[in-house]
Image 1: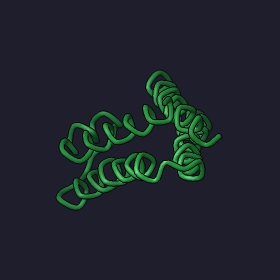
Image 2: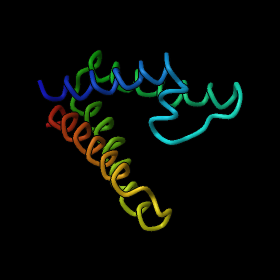
Image 3: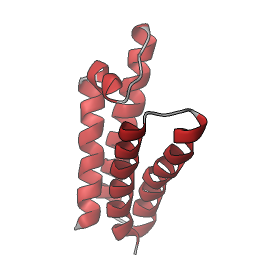
Length: 112
């Protein structure tokens, strides 16, 4: 059940990125430049997340949940050194890592 929640949250974030790319970009502190930039936000923060969550729900097998969990957990892990290397914004970067870690762990429950 928890893995389904992770998949649904992934899809919800994707829907947000797909229908409101400017707001999604602002939320993650990036600035899309022109139509190509907006297209990139829609594709990455929209389509990729929608597909990742949907495949989990449709295929519903441990390897699929493991793959999705690895993607989210990899993002969380990489965000931490970015705090030092990129001088990332401490409170927001930690919040992002906590969100990614949470979604990754939720998805990981479907991998067992």
